[in-house]
Image 1 (spheres, rainbow, N blue to C red):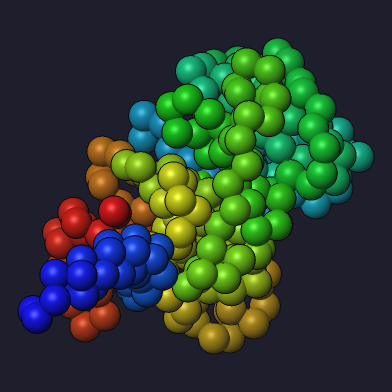
Image 2: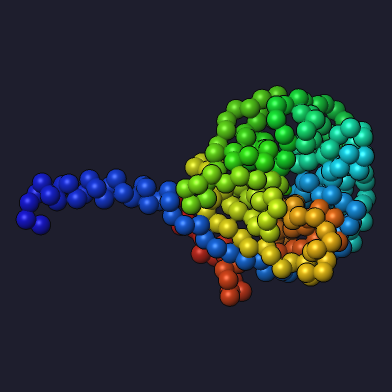
Length: 271
Ligand SMILES: [Ca+2]
């Protein structure tokens, strides 16, 4: 380098460019590897899904058809069910402690249920639509079909933080059902066979999973959209289904043309 000034200038430029490159880094493209397929109630308009102690908990939507369910996932059998009043359209579902939080679509109401009794113990009001719901150990994280994640205090349901979400630097809308796993917020995208992983600290989508082809084309045409993603912590697998889907898929997210779980080499892509 001939000139120290030029060298310093180049160094400054590099330092300025590095964070920008980090923010605009293209997301990793993944596909689903199906491990098992289980029956799922084809009458369930699935809106929320998570596991607790090996049991699947599910929220279903539609006026007059909305419910909270405990499901034996291996058979699809509904073990317990509470129906919502006709005027409520069930949406996202999540657990905090021994309480189940269930959103409603346009009724601005979150029901709070006791896990053991399935009795309603509380309810909250919120502004806007309710779509997906998950929990990061501190806040409930909610979607509304917009381009944001909304972080709420589980004790009061008060909004404490809003995080815009971007894919390749552009706002990503239609964020729907959610699942928080190891620091990432996984979201399926409304009307697409696609799941994304959002870094909740930056809102950047770091992984995109192509979920097309799970159902046979003739079945896929008869049912509604993919919706419902749940992490089984003991099996370390994801479960995916959809609205009126007759099947529940146990899957891993893998590199295309690879049998290896993507987690194997993903330790350094979260910065
Ligand atoms: Ca979920």
